[in-house]
Image (tube, rainbow, N blue to C red; front, side, top):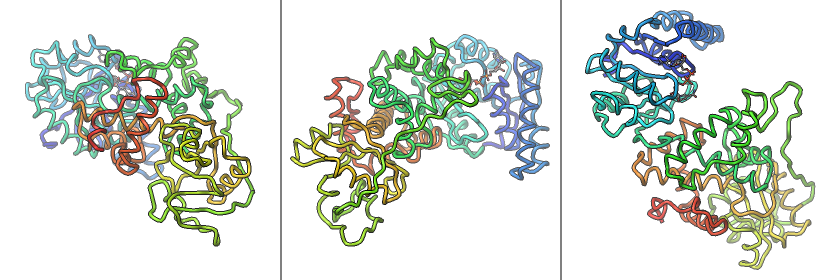
Length: 490
Ligand SMILES: NC(=O)c1ccc[n+]([C@@H]2O[C@H](COP(=O)([O-])OP(=O)(O)OC[C@H]3O[C@@H](n4cnc5c(N)ncnc54)[C@H](O)[C@@H]3O)[C@@H](O)[C@H]2O)c1
């Protein structure tokens, strides 16, 4: 089918539009580019050429490729010239009325067979199509920034979208070597809906003063295995943009507490501390500003003994590679110097200690316990300094840094992760997308190391369910309610 789409039109020469031009031109298609601001379009094209030349200089592409890509893109001064386009992608300002007006023009200018797509990140496809004579022609092609680099494209159906157009959009994305996922037009589509918890839960922890943002970022990256911490990422996205998306999703979901925005972000928007772009967000980006450091604990103590379960579990796997002379035993759980180590399940360490009548060290969640740089722990009251030192020493010995927090339900990574999993599950339960696509979306749209549902399977659905139920009980907040999709897995 891609052979049929020879001529692509892109409206809007901003960050996204110019990236989309590159994707199509790189594939060999002719591209017409229109922007209300002609000068802006030419400037954007020039900077794209500079960027491509730098890539050629580094040997990533050839000089001929740069020439070919540039030769295929033409800036036009009149939208009427889009009459030759087989596919038009809109990437203009995020405003419903302006997008509606544009598509009302485009459906008249283009042939009735041409595909019409919007790159909106938050507006309903159904609403944009509402003013068109033939709303079945419109669908969403939601690229991620930077479009030439990011593999994911959400292919979004409006209520009236023609399934054939959607299928053609999807195969076009495949031909561009992208990873397309299908989604229904719902608030936040897939990625912006599911990822809300990656910001919302750490912001809630910050508000509850469980740790500072540097510590939470360190736990989420070094112990849990995310590529970037939530606070650094919010600074990069822009606190105002991130807050606006959270508000839109929350309001569109009829104030569902799962999506409740954070007062902290609201205050930061008022103070104009918007992240990297204003040189001050959670972090300070001014030259010479001190770089805040996370806190680690370290111990040179010897440890007495380590017991590991005979049958390796998801969590105990991290000890399997570890050899330490004779003092490694097999038992039914992980025990270090008399202290039982368990994965958190959303209850306090204190509660666990009372239940099993033994000192407990709770370990936070990791995508990859074996290879993580750090572990994040908390201790029940019965774990004395002697035991703490030995536990810390053992992890140090295994080459892992150790972060310790006060006793709190779900620690940090587990608490965030079960919320992410719950939302991924709920998106599938509510027909937004398939289980396969939600996992692809989070891997390729926001670079999560694993798909959330596949990871839940690995750690055990029962553990996910138990953690959420314990969190709901602890906080008395409906935001932690379990998705029926998860109940179905038990
Ligand atoms: N920036 C991102 O990370 C990102 C990611 C995914 C999707 N999006 C979506 O893509 C769209 C564009 O975002 P962006 O960041 O590239 O914006 P941008 O502000 O960088 O660029 C928008 C461009 O559209 C032009 N424009 C505005 N109104 C126009 C009109 N009526 N006709 C023609 N041109 C017009 C402007 O002159 C500007 O050059 C938005 O809908 C946004 O929500 C953005």
